[in-house]
Length: 433
Ligand SMILES: Cc1cc2nc3c(=O)[nH]c(=O)nc-3n(C[C@H](O)[C@H](O)[C@H](O)COP(=O)(O)OP(=O)(O)OC[C@H]3O[C@@H](n4cnc5c(N)ncnc54)[C@H](O)[C@@H]3O)c2cc1C
Image: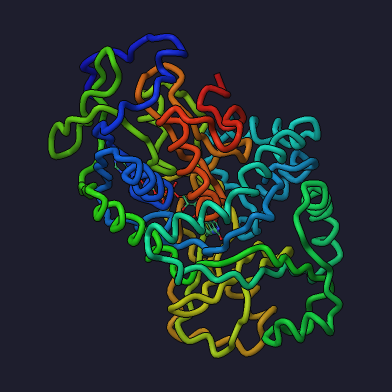
């Protein structure tokens, strides 16, 4: 990295100064998080450059399950995580798996993940997730309206399905957290389930209906519309890769990209799973890693799924989308460099076949993407602890589509100096110091 000026060692009060009105803001990363922030800040009167070498929504925001899941108030690391570790290492095709070859690099992240799974940590983490989840749909509604994208969100609810008693037992602490945090859900008897979703086979023994969840018909189209709406508000899309941020005494002066220097007055880092290096440069040494996930897209699935579902047994999220049925999910801790394991995508298809008799696989396409994941399951959202006029927003793990709009709202509050819509403390970039 080029090293023009050392980070300003200003006080927390100085670094927490809002962005000046009308400032030129470089938003690094045009995934759903960066694009949502770019649109919000453009609407606040900032002059936005949304910078990404790829078109908006090309990375993790492209291939996800598109489920809007305010029910997801439970962290990924739950009590019992340590005991499950051997199982995660044993089966490379399990819904949650660790690649042996990546274990040495993963160890510090994994240690924090396990540490976050104890009941004393789970409770406050869940509270912090619930605070964001409670605002997820209202914020998304308002952002979709700004982007002229209301047609992309369907609010028909979501099913949580269980085939085995073991999976049901495994989900007990998650369901207990949902109950405690006021998530609305109801248990369906098998007959009612079949009426709600006739495409399901007979293997499901228990199910929950979550009426307050939604799904996106095309996640990438959503990101493209957010970015386009930002452009109509005077912003620009710049297809560069950012290599560094050049800092002066008042904060960022320019971003250094593969095409040269681009002047700016403020920066928002939203580079998803690849944000770690730039985050360190911007004063936040964070243990960001990736949970790799897969999808299989079936353009003509041969069945009509009415609403999305999650399989408690197979880690599968199935979503009816504009261009077919998407079977997505699972976690593979394997870093950013290793090639995809197509057998993991095939495993999703197997679970889909089991749950949806009649599924037609012709023309299936496969994809792998990198969730930006923090070991405590909480995103990083906040002003840099040391660099003025700098905000960070990444690490949304399994919930980036769900939480992008509320993140953008919170970032807009923080950079304009308004009272924040939720207490930002639990998501602070400095929390790992
Ligand atoms: C299989 C799967 C299923 C999922 N299902 C759901 C779901 O149903 N609901 C849900 O809420 N979430 C879901 N997620 C999670 C969600 O997709 C992510 O949390 C979200 O997409 C992250 O968005 P992002 O903008 O932070 O990252 P990304 O979409 O990855 O965007 C980051 C962008 O930053 C750019 N970038 C990186 N480095 C630089 C640089 N140096 N300079 C410029 N640009 C840079 C990248 O090119 C990329 O475009 C799922 C994820 C997976 C993998």
